[in-house]
Length: 289
Ligand SMILES: [Zn+2]
Picture (cartoon, rainbow, N blue to C red):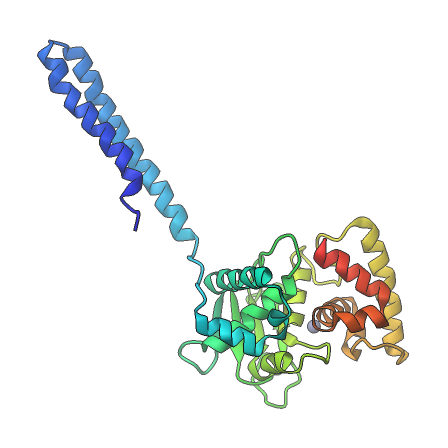
């Protein structure tokens, strides 16, 4: 569709130039005819060169995946965050899902082709985690591996394993994220426990985009970085003292604190606002400014 369009002006130009040669020759304008001949050759080369650049650019960029009506129903049934959006934001959400699915490979272990619902759960996790930011790109991420169960720290499948998700940093798996499917689904089925492993792992990926997973995400203003450092310290202390509504895992280290609080903010913003006003306000500024 539309492929011939870029050539139309060139074809008209060649036809005009070629057509003018016999006319000029009949007036004995041999030199002018020769010049026009050279111009035809040069413009053919230029046209081919431009065409090559354009096609190369297009093949580098994947076509975004268009969601079907069924996909939209699926989102409505499975993704509480999507349901809470205005109609306008729902369209942006769907658009970003399409971009994610076009750019990132999703491999479901044990399936020849990843199930659509698995792909949508992964893409929704990404879009929710990055929602509200002025830009979204998933940095070095190229592939999300979805395991049929939890796994061990060594990435071995293990139903009793405690690892539900992992963002790699450095090494051979630097471009890969792993998610456990049952944990991923549970994150969306229970929408009031402040937990969602998909959103949690993508929060780590966001944290990673400035080069280190350290609890200090990119694009945070200088003043907020200072405040965030203080709130992190106090927040971790409060969790350890049993005096916090932030899930315990947030006290592991700064990186986990950022991922846990971000997920809490995305899933239960109203509760965070009531229980941890300063953290809520900072999250609001970070994700919505
Ligand atoms: Zn984590």
